Image 1 (tube, rainbow, N blue to C red):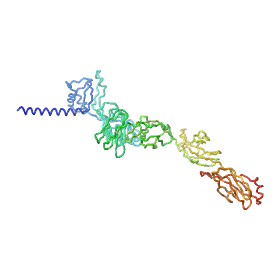
Image 2: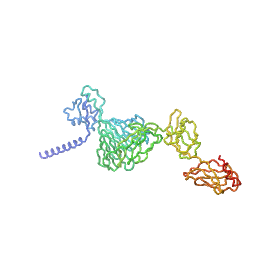
Image 3: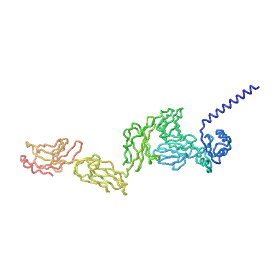
Image 4: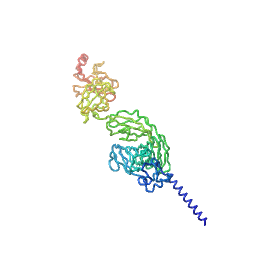
Length: 561
């Protein structure tokens, strides 16, 4: 009779031990917080205000091995599992909104509350900053979609109790609750500046492929577009934990390093962040509505962002560009802007930031040039400059110089109310001109692109003499050997009755003796090697006597006009 009893007793003891071990294992995995007791606290009272149920105090008493559960003292620390703490949903707050941002289905407004389950979507030129209930800030750059998956305070004391003693004061000054939050990134990226606060569990950022958890640091999490749905995380300071959702792999990532997780769960090696690109060659001032530049040297793609503030909380442009490609940013107002860039490695991990400020002054935009066009060629003399004025800026400034740096100004007119100007330029050579618009209030816009044109000399007057054998007229002029000349010999001053014409090389033309004497006229024009055709030379009047032998006596009487 006693053996079965002993046997059943043994079984009961084993079951109790097994149950105790199971409960101990479960409790070992619990996240614990340290709760500081204030003056009026009792365990039973905490069950109604802080704990999840009226009976939860019993487990708290056992965990803390309290000899008398009815007696707890101000300043005393109680270890409480977060599963026993009451959780209250708290909203995040939009503390910055720039450009197109939507909270759920409605346009986002500054100061709006973003609750659990609510999404935040930024347009191509929009950005937002979300302040979580624990003081953390989440920057949401352009073209991103994020969601507040969870935002809760655990164990909040209601109402607050005034301090009545030193121990009570220390307890009252301690944080009265623990925070747990989860952000879900579905598209684009977020940048988290996690506050160093009491947490019921690590602040998490989840994506379709990874979970990134942290207690206090600065880090970035992004989701690449495309079929791979790759998640990349970069830690600026502190340590984060990166775990793949589809596979039991993960790693602790320290400051200065990053990791990536593919859709199938494959995780990259933890990699050192690439050094920041060199922005020293970036101009400090841009004067065109579309900001354009290429960074020399980088052999990796770049992510480039432009913001209205040095903290990059109001980002208006966020682009990824190929290595060595030109960046183009449109739609910026005239103002000072902040630019930052970082390199991207083969795993999609983004490196350290380089930042630089620049000024955009592109308005009022310069007038539209009409004449002379760029690379135009014409003869010296009167040159007309014409343009289409800016409708918002009635006045214009015109500068004309003989050098591209505009150190040798020929004209500088800044009170032009018309749309044209004529100038006499008697000296051949290269000239450069540019225009700027001026508003009625005096706001002076930038100069437009420099236009270059060429002034060529007019042909020198020709001379004529009888050939050595007396049977021809020989016309000569000064000119370059590489140019060609179009010559005309006519019986009338208007050159409607052409007797002879030709295109010759060099600077001489021999014409056989005309069949009959009388008054004739000669002119020529130069065709240069680049295609420029000069005006005609001055007309040379040639009187050819009927008695050809007397022609030599008439040469001094030939007139130039």
